[in-house]
Length: 65
Image (cartoon, rainbow, N blue to C red; front, side, top):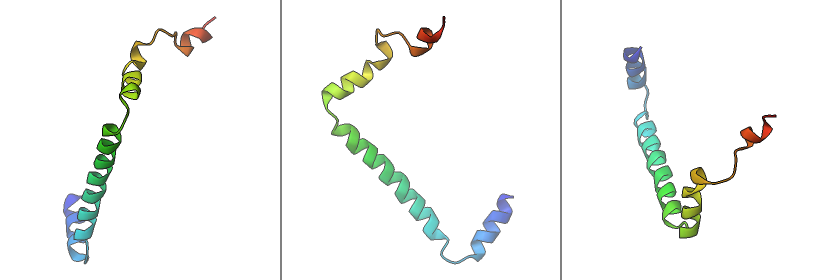
């Protein structure tokens, strides 16, 4: 199947654009994530890091009679 795809893509013109475009989207997405994390306030980071350690009971336990 890969041989079929490679042959089909080799006969098309302008296919190399798709590889470059997908790499640009990949890099851009992770740059945006890194920028958002670096600009996040320390208090927000501490609040998010303490979520699994919270003392509140889960909602599943509250629904059990």
